[in-house]
Length: 362
Image (cartoon, rainbow, N blue to C red; front, side):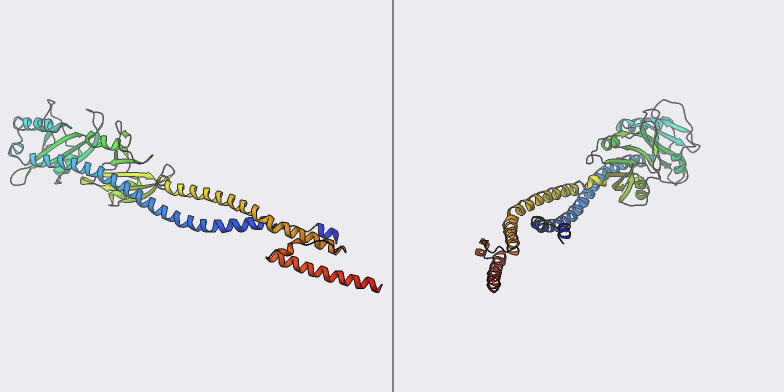
């Protein structure tokens, strides 16, 4: 039996049980608070992130819209004048030069005849055949506007070539009025835009070519982003997107602008939810403090319970050996331990009387 008693596995002591009790009492409310605080932080962070991206996207898109409108409207108004309808180089050239001076970003302004050959230009270059250019084909086919973004050989940066038809009073197609525009008016704003720590803005041409993005202007080639989720969603009219780029989940706001240009403002989702991580860190710190406080109170309270029980255990051991003279001080306590001590005291008196009578009989 002694060997069996020695092999008994001891469970948690009073200190361990008190520590767990105090820890649970502290952590359960914290866990509930953490859950609701985290959900609220996620909701607030998501709304704040989307609002920030939307604000930047709208501001950049408005800038692009305004610039495109100025260029398109000026061409339409000029193409409707009698001077342009003459299709005479000596009549058209002074007007083309005046436009290039009035809009300094337009480094080339020219007219094209029905055969695709240039008629008049603001510079002194010889006539050039534009019959194969997409923007000329579009207006020749009856479209109200033709456009194309290319890397200009003149400025070695992206340029926007836009053309509108020149028609007579009867609506017959006489040719096209076109101009090549440097995009620095809008790309400089976009390149210098800062969105959080690592967010960025992108400007996409109608054909999906990347014109510029935060920190860089395309000056050697225009990247084809027609398969990029932001382009496909923006081209179809979508305004909010989540997609993976370079292994990170991105949250993006998209704005399709005038003439189908697309402004994309994106930010890594992990950056959007920085506030949630801060909440998690704060709650973990609270958990650590709660554990220390629970251990502190367990250390204070457990001796007031464990020590009397140990003394009562030692007294019962002595009683089992026939020693009934141990003094039980715990009988003065008014709690459960005091009740246990008084029960042991009564048992001791009863055993003392019983043993005394047994000895007298012997």
